Length: 314
Image (cartoon, rainbow, N blue to C red; front, side):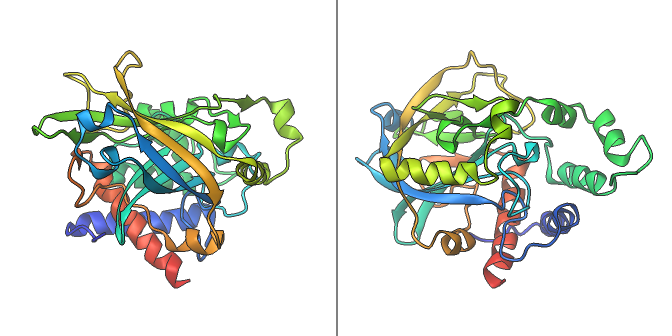
């Protein structure tokens, strides 16, 4: 996973790390966003339709080992699971294709992102940091939201708390290209849907929950037996925006079943392994899956790598 060669992009990534620390405080050894999480091992089994869309190895072999991390939002490693700021919840899926050979899918529980570019997201975080309690209105973040309708839409989008990470739907916000054996490209976004069904808690139910109820519930659930998700591809049509994660595609778009993600056990030495693993939003050296030209992809990759190096060194 190399750093991009674009020095401006690297500088933006470094500035984002600083902004995250201003907003969340410094927490060495943890991610600047989605700091609190739990990681599981399992297996991906592709559908019959997956190999028709892509020659990627995990879509054409009988099964692939996976490492999946579920997480809360924010860079606060002890944020209560009951805190509204813990939404959107995150998911990161690693398909372990061989020794030091893998590809990842990253998503969260809101169908879009608050900014189109890294520079715009940095401006948003800096506005949040400058809007501490007591700041006269209109605060910097109020001014930013007033001039950035996509960010305002993200902030105002309902984000209910799930009863379980296993009963939450997750969205891949970036577009990707699936390439078949004839070179045909299908533009898609990933969707991860729980086979147990989506289930949310109302405020009354959430009030009685423990601050770590999602981690405890997931550990107890997988100890009793596996649970699973469907991996779907939402297929773009002509005219759909492929390079802007703030824009949702209509739900009327075709969905193709790519396979089943079955989670079977907790990862051993969970905290240590979470600290070490660096998920990569860009598919690299994997035939059949390619990145779109969404500007967030290179930015996210640089940010994940820089923060991962810091995390490992802490």
